[in-house]
Image (cartoon, rainbow, N blue to C red; front, side):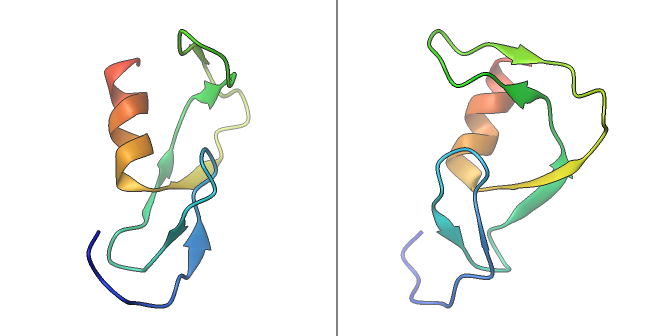
Length: 62
C-alpha cells in the first residue's frame, strides 16, 4: 500500500502482512481456496483479518 510500517497481522487468505491502518477485521465467509472463487457461509461466525485486495475479492463473490 506504499507504506513502510510494521505488520500487526497477516491476511487469512493470502498471508500478506498488514498494518493497523489497512487491516480489515470482520465476519467473512469461508473461502474454499479454489478457482473460480467459492465462498460458503461461516457457521462459526468468526471475525478474520484480511488485506484490502482480498477483502475486495471476497466482497465481489458474496
